[in-house]
Image 1 (cartoon, one colour):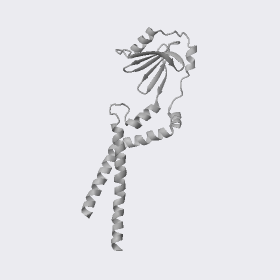
Image 2: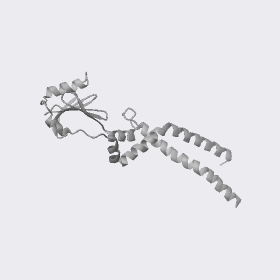
Image 3: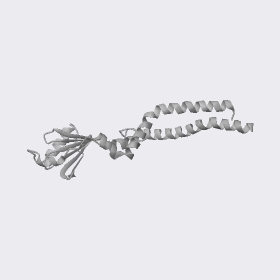
Length: 196
């Protein structure tokens, strides 16, 4: 390969290597951090999750009233006004008989015996007393980190495009990095061979 052609190729590779690195750096960092989380999830969750709420207190709650199907539906539709319940199921949640209702914005779960309810949306679950007082809020950090790792974004709007671009960029970094590392050494080896 002629020296002028080699110099142009090296310049093009250095420039493209640098610009791709600048553009995808946030996602490369995110993939690294979320990958670290996946390897050490229990330890990391102990550090970032607040202590849980003791739901056994529900049984001793003062003035608790058993919830009917109608009152559960009314509660769910009052949380997200203008939305109708798309799915209604009566089954156990956290070992308590409950009404579980899906709406376009999320899910409402009502404990039938006490009226306590949970509101789940996105990566969050909120626990409420029967009077509407929030008792606890929980983020599903495991799901957040896994989604970021797999999609590169929290919503499904972009599918896996961002993660795919990041993955291909890492392959590009490896190949161009190897080439940029090897080219000067190949030149040096070629000179040594010509001298001998």
